[in-house]
Figure 1 (cartoon, rainbow, N blue to C red):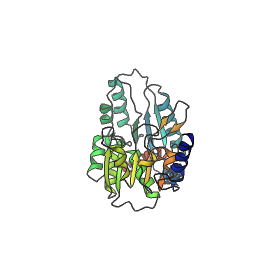
Figure 2 (cartoon, rainbow, N blue to C red):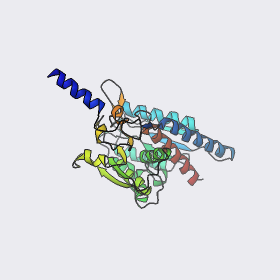
Figure 3 (cartoon, rainbow, N blue to C red):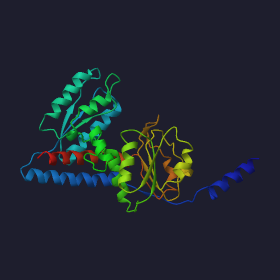
Length: 303
């Protein structure tokens, strides 16, 4: 019996149920650094022309450790890009009314071109009310219904940063994705839904799948592009992936060991996909770089 199991295992690895190939790794960190450097040069050009330095206000409510890390990374990125960062750190028990009052102040502050409220918020604060209070022309996160609506009709203003970053990464592959079938795993307002409109603008045929979609592996198997944003570590398996597909992993999950991992089984999937993003070092840096780009664009709009 042992020998039979051993022979079966050898057969599986010698003849796996999918072609063995080696995906090209999409280096989001390098792409983001190039974008950030172009932003820095544009900011310096503004200063040399007598224009003001762009400003980004970041509001972090409470002391969520993960959020603190994200905000710290955003502050560092602002410094490298030459953008002024204004930090506001109200306590976790701040009232919703006081938080909205702070946002109104920033809406009227001429030094501030972009306002970012770090999510998630404490349970007693309504996230939708907060997002809708941010002035659409300072909504550099691209979450305001006005900006989402503009994206939906194909006339975007500020685009949500993560889908925008994913689109940039797709462009770096040099692959013509016109007409490609794309599956987005996850239907959040932050990634899944706006990602569909980004892909539609690129003449892809997008489909949004989620926890209640029927036969998810079969749906993914048909996709030329897979965008994973479901928030479950290693959820998407290699044998679900169409050989040669482009796989973009938006997931950022911290394991008990402290290691960061994505929603895709990366080590196995990279032997099937044509292109794939790593976690970390893939989509995450691009999200922040696109946030800075939106802030610069806001400053230009307000000159």
